[in-house]
Length: 364
Ligand code: ADP
Image (tube, rainbow, N blue to C red):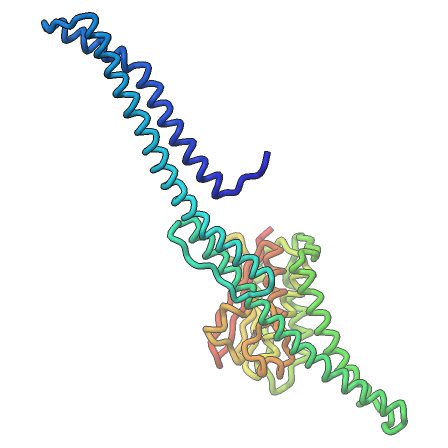
């Protein structure tokens, strides 16, 4: 059976409903009409009107003829009116649907600026809204992806040029090998390593290939060793790092490695964006959740930027964060890792005053 288009289906279904209605009306009326007329004549006779048998048959026939003629006219006018209306209704539904189909095809072909028009049919309007929301977010990701590729090319090119330059000079003897030089080369390659590692982690986290093994975890040893590790990196004139951990904090259901990775990213950001003051790692319990907050007194984030910070490739101010060595990937990974462990992350920040990144994990 050939597949009918939605417009034809709507049109036919309206027509079928109308024909069934009209058909049943005619059949029932046709069957009951002679009986009703006969009953009516009998009632008249009982009231004293004299109706001859011949005129009775004549009257009955006459009524039937009149009824048949009006039934034919009702069918003709009913079918035409219902057909016209049903065509109009199906067009009204089909027009926005066809428009939507065209727009999605345009969108798929790469015209990401395409948006659907609103419709006066609530369900279609809802569909347009959802599509437009998805389109805006995809367009944003696409813009940031393009920006990131250009930033990445720039960021990859700089260390690569430096490394190649030094290696060439070492090779032709213009530069004498020294410990300082080798450390410079190590620093540049570390930067490259971080970039590629971040990108790989993000693509794994987003594709759902990251293995999460939730177990009962005692957070204290993880937090303590991180505080020690990060404190070593902090300069004397820089911020101080402290840990506030209530001894009765329960075990949490989490993946220890992934939790450490989350904290490394959050602490790394706090260290990167805080020149002086305090960076505090604070833990507390709220009902069936344990909250961990990384609080800093750094440069902060503008309130208008806050809704974007967990989007991949997003950086508050590109020149500012590339100066700090950021790629805009860390927080996207953090959010994904927390969600994979049934937790959630929140942020509060004041530009120039500092930020609080807090996330929760379920109590065992
Ligand atoms: P990046 O590698 O650029 O730090 P993230 O995803 O970790 O990427 O962070 C995204 C952006 O959020 C950063 O570029 C920075 O502008 C802002 N940000 C993150 N953490 C902080 C913080 N603790 N203080 C100020 N700004 C921050």
